[in-house]
Image (cartoon, rainbow, N blue to C red; front, side, top):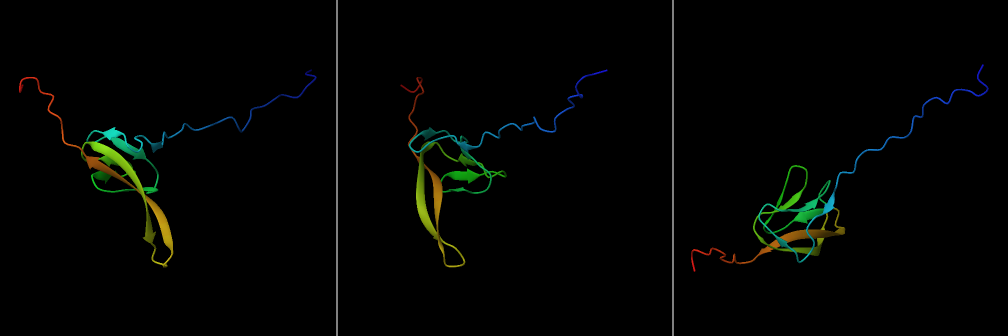
Length: 102
């Protein structure tokens, strides 16, 4: 006969994997066209010029250039002002790296 009760199993002990959300390209970094700038849930950061928004609210570069984040005030429908962050890409002229052209 056992001198202690059976331990049983725990209802805890599970954890889900992280979703790897967040800013992928910081302010001032260079982005290629199609590069992911921010992975997010909801529009915490909004798209600006040369930035597109995916179905899952991911922000990505529409053109190659320098990533910039800007804070701005937006008037809500109640009249209250809300600070928003806008991500934009400032295009830079493409440098010709073709060796046959020279």
